[in-house]
Length: 78
Image (cartoon, rainbow, N blue to C red; front, side, top):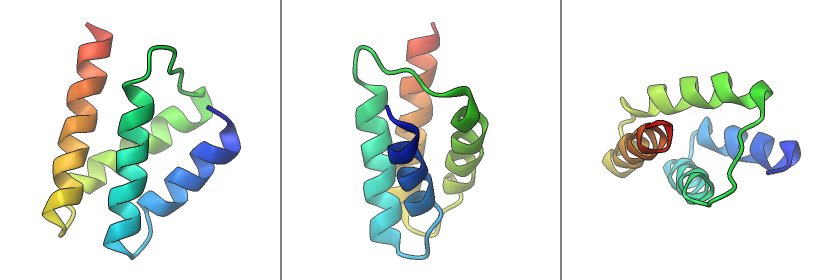
């Protein structure tokens, strides 16, 4: 995935609008589920930190997607 697209997703994941946070996290989850998904080293730590913060998101649907993101990531690592 291009750095520009990842930067856009990261920006939306940290925004004030819960709908943008939800959609950006959903987009990231869809990318993670793709066969050839490779995360740039530059964004790996940033995205992990943002998703960790989303576990405490006031919007339950956003925090639920964050849990799914980590679940998919763990499955890929095993």
